[in-house]
Length: 214
Image 1 (cartoon, helix red, strand yellow):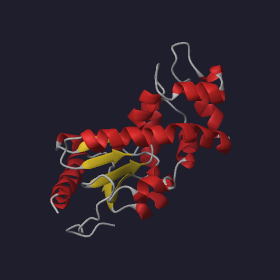
Image 2 (cartoon, helix red, strand yellow):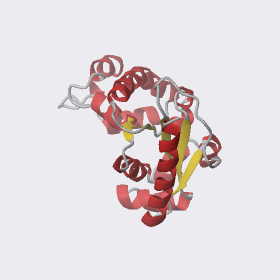
Image 3 (tube, one colour):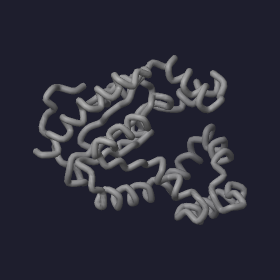
Image 4 (cartoon, one colour):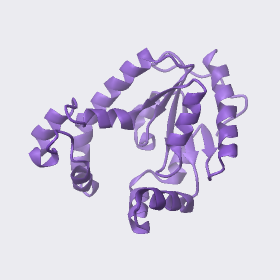
């Protein structure tokens, strides 16, 4: 966990301060990313990149169609996300096969965006960072957005119109909360109070600015 002031960072491949941002579903990671972006951080969103790779005409679609079949491609040429999600959810080997296509492309696109980014420091928004040794080794600090499971449940059930059982299944498929917290260098507690959330972001932003200058 963080020690104030934060220690001198060891620069990674990106050549400047790089933060890995993660959190479980419903923890408010996107809200936190937006607050950092408003303060001048460069946000590189791996989910957005993955969606662009599997959109109509996306770079990953030819390989996905070749390996999984046309049944996983919508009429517009985009990935049939619901069908693929159901397919890989219970089959770890199929999930790994999909990741073998997407992950190198995502990594390459992240590198392109990092080189072009103009922000004060880099924040890589990586939902599955806790399961990825690659990302853990390629950022200087890991920032976890955290909240109790009951808060996750309430948010996702309301936002996505899912049942409690469905949300619990998604939570169970992600890294355990304790694992994320163990990996964290910094933690933001997001239980719904935007004033408290903003104050935590501002505090870390000032420290990240200081580290970025070292």
